[in-house]
Length: 544
Image 1 (tube, rainbow, N blue to C red):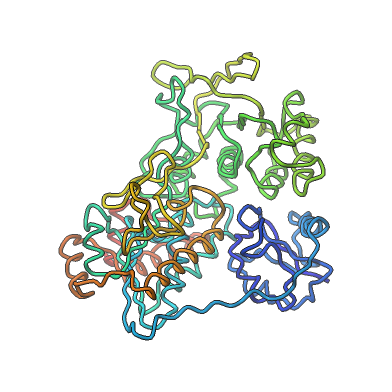
Image 2 (cartoon, one colour):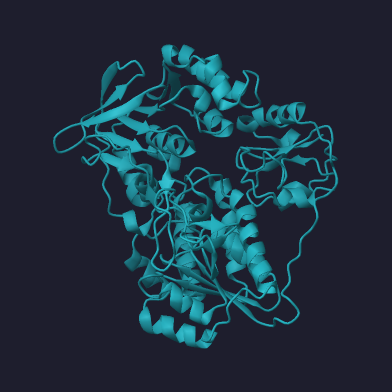
């Protein structure tokens, strides 16, 4: 018997360290760790101890005999990985325990942001004796994309939030939510009161298509749409036109598939989840029967994961379809993508898409995967009425729709007081050290982590190794005497923030928000019912 890693895997590799026989791959430091869709367990080596399942923060690991039927494919997916990547080096990875230099008795770090990359950094820093961490978050609640980006039907993925929440309860971690750096406090003021600042604000903007009609009503970004159905307070009052029979999603990564799934499934599929009540009501009145997911290149280059595509194929009441003429795979494409026809995971994804191209629709709703089509214009006067899709040979078709959602990538935003590379959409850095863009030299005390550091790539757990690199750089600089000494005290800083932001949400206030949302959820048979605007969140934080 063996254990099996399944769809919800977050890639943070907590399971790797506890495996006594080191049968989980890839591991941090392996060549394919940064790009892997998930981690895998070698069935021939696993000794059935269950340590990995206990350690997994998202409940993604099952004994093979207990695999739920929808996850049965993952038994073969795990085994297939090791058919191509046999275990060789089974020595355990070295355990790294950080500590402050002997001469340093106090070390204060401010972390801007409270999403996954920020929380991994906070977790690692706050484990050290003598370190105190101040977490500053623009919204009244922490956890970033875990709260406002993960699809409502991916409850397992959200479980890692419980681990992050425990980190925020540590006595050497101070929570300052509803505080915006650049508005309520400057980066320079953070450095006056802290030894170092880590910027981990994620990617709060989106890439554009750059085509005529993109600014029409009904043309929206996936970032906005996802934030809306997840109850982000900045988007609680948004309206999306769901009155048409077709929606078009531009892009074919996991976010595009999340959006397609939300639009294609009936609202009843989400009524027990954390989806926004506003979004639930809108979906109940939705007339959408077809969601078209459009990729610019062939299926070889699909950016979605195998797990997400398999899940799409099994949606009840929804047919997954494709156009036979668009799903062919050329040798040139395989070479360009660095794949072979039998490449791990691609063969399985190709099987799903090829089956979709042969499928006869029988369900009331459908998702159609389209390939090798470039959107060249959105049609309409005041609002979107269609999108023009153009093939490589110049042949075009106009697809009627009242909703176009672009899911072509995220971009970070600049922050006052921190350099920003607008062309790359990231903070210029060297292993997390923020550098002067003109000289390339590190700016003392300034660091970054997550998407704002490396760009919008990877999954939640990818941020663990990313943040660990940043923390290692910070501690190396501290040991070498390259970290400035703050002149202000932590007490002075607390007084400064409270004088600037009277509606500050501290740890106690955040707990009250949690109690209010979880209590409302328990009363209605849901995980939680989210408060959808800042006024209600702040009211709950005050206990009013």
